[in-house]
Length: 361
Image 1 (cartoon, helix red, strand yellow):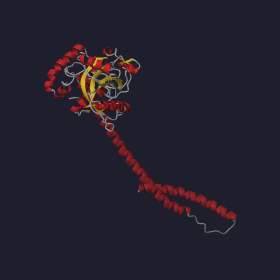
Image 2 (tube, helix red, strand yellow):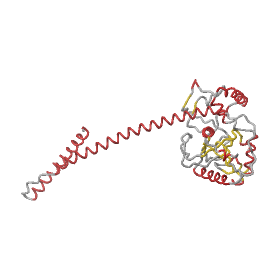
Image 3 (tube, one colour):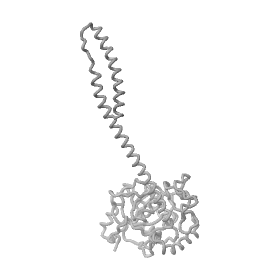
Image 4 (cartoon, rainbow, N blue to C red):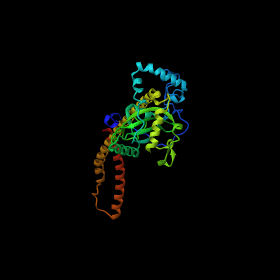
């Protein structure tokens, strides 16, 4: 039974359009320190390293290309992995993260037909959510490209899976392999991505989750990308069958104890902090909207009342008495001039009085 007949109901989104990877990873924290753990810093499992790996400061606005595992010594990572086996017995969430469905030794890596694409993510936060929720989303053009490839694969009489090689910008590594198991839903979007600009989504199933350095894959050249190394690919860059199968074999056989699964608790905390911050922002905007609407309503009411008062008083003022029509033209001109001045004075007084009356009402 292939992946299409299994009918995965999981959901994944692509945050990429990035360029080739940089050689120096960033821990994604700056001096702003939007959320600080101070003396009560959270720690990952039994590690002696701060959960955020950045002097206790967790900047939820930063682009996180690698989690705290990047700063851990190799022997520390091995110890953490060994201890996590015991932790999983009493920790339901950890047991769910360290699912034995990933990195299976019996995962097939040889196919007569298959499609392969490079996926570039802006942050590892979004890869965490893809693994957690089973979904991904790309740019509008990327979604169209992947959707067309999936539909073409489904129409193929032979089994033709669509594999996605994930890499985070500036991480100098790949972080796993997922399979696209459904078409793109262009009308459905979610709000848990680090940025709000991603629309549409499609389901994915993760098969391999491990950190594979670019050095293991740099020798693979893509003729359909100006003969550049596969490590210099942009988001949704297609990889031909021969090179894709080679990459799949490297991912499967590469031995390492490091993966984003080691930092899942870290990214869970970051997601919670981001959601709380977004909720506060929305509440603040709603509060401002209610006040603004109230002020606007009061302004409109005042203006309408003012106009009503003005119309009554103005009608009285402009009806000037021109009863004395006798006399010389000079006298009439002089009288009209004096009357106009008087009318203007009276009009100003009426405007002031009308405004006061409208406000009082």
